[in-house]
Length: 68
Image (spheres, rainbow, N blue to C red):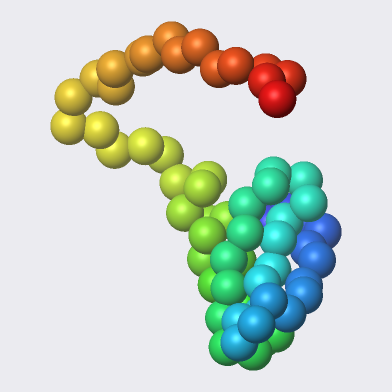
């Protein structure tokens, strides 16, 4: 099954960065084509079923918000 996603592309120094807007997943490459190909691979990996050797550990963390 294929699904379309929106991506933005911009240059950061020597790298071209690509980011999927719907999932906030990003990748990079030396060219726009490479950055988009790497983003496509990252998205495919994101949707692969997890293969865990043991159950994950869940942690609760506290974060200071609005600290100056």
